Amino acid sequence: MAVYDVIIAGGGPAGMTAALYALRNGKSVLIIEKEGFGGQITHSPRVENYPGTLSMSGNEFADKLFDQIIAQGADFEIETVASVECDGDLRIVRTEEGTSHTGKTVILATGVKHRMLGLENEEDLVGEGISYCAVCDGDFYTGKTVCVAGGGNSALQEAILLADKCKEVIMLQDLPVFTGEARLQDVLFAKDNVRSFTNVKITELRTDDGEFKGVSVEDRTSGTSQTIDCDGLFVAIGLIPENEGFKDLADLNSYGYFDSDEQCTTKTPGVFVAGDCRSKQIRQLTTAAADGAVAALAACRYINQ
Image (tube, rainbow, N blue to C red; front, side, top):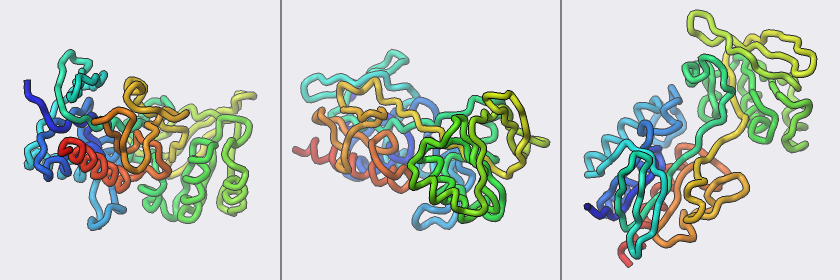
């Protein structure tokens, strides 16, 4: 069985950047991805905040990065990593498909998934009316009306950014009150183009010939329904890290993210973390790529020692 220098769990921007940097340092790399290479960025129809690129789709970015690491000699498998075990100086990566792979180091770049509303057609409308990132997609709604689903700090921060661009921002909170910081609420609701509904549940994503047109909401107490016309819906009801299976290797914070600093190291020698799965303030394409570079170079130093 081949022993790789670096095995990477996750084929998003962090994982693929880690592969690139490890390969450029002469290391053998296996990258394991459970669904499709690119991660969350593939849901973005236009990416205009990546340095050196005026505009591209998330799929274009993912395809180019994948082609780049394959050209450099990366191996890849479409499998789901289930566990990582330490065997002396080696790391054994086991998958749900029943296979195992051996490496000198492992980089966990497992990413996160957005908590979704669970409504019909929701996945089809991602990038076509539904977004999860105001920094990424807010400019596309300049001068338009958008709704923001959520009431915590993330939702309030998204809405503040959107209010500076959009004609109107409509907050939709399913609890009786907003749970985000009072300071953020003061900033947001001082804006003339922001209005809100509390204690409402989004029950339907309204479309016309496949084009997103708005939402239907229902008051959770009275059951009264109404429709709200809007050009886009930003969903900010939380992120879900999938790190529980690796908690024996890397400490998790109270939210389930890997509790690692900017060095991307863990409590287990030879195991590193990178990307949105790591505890951090900013989760963007650029920060994921930065993590990938840092983790890969740390893995290379570990091997060289």
